[in-house]
Length: 363
Image (cartoon, helix red, strand yellow):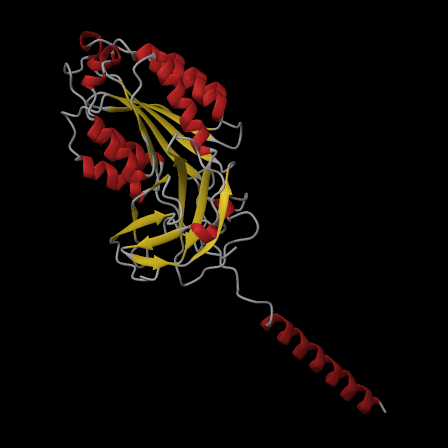
């Protein structure tokens, strides 16, 4: 009898173990965590996932998939320059390097977290408009930023680039930074008269404030990354070229909005072709205000655009991880009365590197 009871108990235990093993095997893919947790207190890049006290991502770690997914924000305007809010997924055609792509996620986005850098030219050409620029930019941030959700930075440049305030989600620090921001003459600043390194300023801001990060795990985790640039577009001191600056912005998924302002608002002093190319290649737009009222209106338009964007996601048919540039084209074939604004491309990730601009999970 005792031997029979022992055998029955052993059989029951074996059945329970088999059932548990089967259940575990059916739980789905294993969620991976970071191999080496970041050091406690280490600064996190813009758009990086929240970290727990142990250094691991908080809850719901992304499932690692073998494919990359490209996220693209875009906006649409009609012939009266009004934003179009009735675009449907069925009416959108996306191409990469001329090949049509299958869009599997489409949504209108009005409330994504914002990471924004105001980049102001303080060279001699901006002496008489600097006060207006400073006032309008601060008013914009005070209107747009949502405390504890959005972050902003303030950058000024002549021939050198100066981070007046790094990325912060505290509006009081933004206010203090603008209070410290002043235009200085060439004598007091020691600057070379008229020296302006615009392309370096864009490149340094993009790469140091907006470093590439691993792909967000859901479309909801995408952040809007923007540089708002106030300058006349002149550059005579950069080590980088215009194309270098555009490439740096595209590698870090940064949209550039340019406000071209000449001395005393003289539009003839503004390099429109430079600012238009820089903006349109990265998915933004260029504005050319000729008065303080125009400047305020331009900031209002930027605010409205960032609340009138669409987000699409697709898995590129070209799966090569070679670091090459891939051109993107978004069209609405049935809407000849509209214009689409989006970044013109991205750099594919390299094998072994982080997937930039890509989601790891289908919604």
